[in-house]
Image (cartoon, rainbow, N blue to C red; front, side):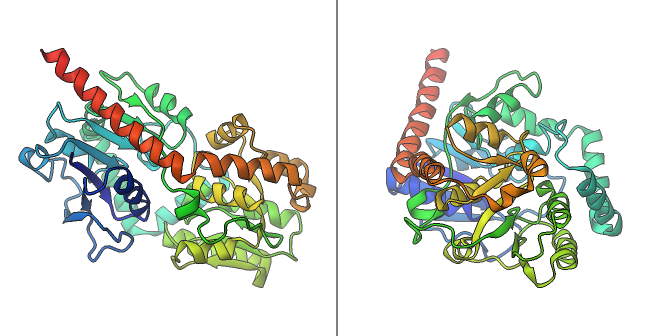
Length: 393
């Protein structure tokens, strides 16, 4: 068996490949679509090929059909402009899997969901207006929409066999977002395991302070300004505020840092440089409280880490993450509850709540479950292939 992984240069790919190699050893090859060399986030053990493409308007596949015919299964790690055109070259009888990341369906297929709160929306607009490159990008994207190029992605999705979004509920959101000629089948699959990625080296430990973690990246969907405003209004001036801003929009990160320093002085710490996960966990471990102000699903890995460590976590009530964890019996709070009751920032979870939260994430994101899901994922893809072949007999 030969499995081909199509991906961008991102840290999540190594997590996935470790699992696939364990379940299907020596069966995995990788093609990385990137415009930067050398690779910055991936340290691959299987064979890999780097493909460089600087054409923004290129909607043609970068590899020919014969490149794909030798593989039994092709897996897309997210589905962006660099990869979805490849479906045009992949043989129809070859099963394909889309492992969704969130950005690859919220930004276009679920664009009717308002993701930015008012102050963040205004800040985002000002950043776009002051940056010629970003203004040009907005204009180009508008032209692309007018030309109908996004239909290439729709047609690609209609060719995909299996879709695994981050949260199960997001499958229905995407499936109901439009009328599809065909929509992929559903399966559960997640990146990262507790033992090998998320809390490796911190097994059994707890949060060690009352610092407050705000957001997970320098992306506007984090709605950081509203979260920082809220803490400022509460008069939080004697606790450290930590904001991870090592990837995303640099201008946005700079602006948030200015606001954070203005509000909290030396107590505000912006994490501007990418760090190994063990160093990152050691840093955020002092945060007994977490505010994730996203409207959309995002920062699930950070939430899992902090649930394991016993922090009190605030997410927005409308975020699908909230419904998912609550349905699983996890104890977490909403940002809306915090607005009403600021004393929650001085109220850690009970020992019972912490134990229940840890037990859930330890099981759901365990190494054994990851191996089981990976085996099931591939088996379902091959069942799809068998049905496809039978339908043509």
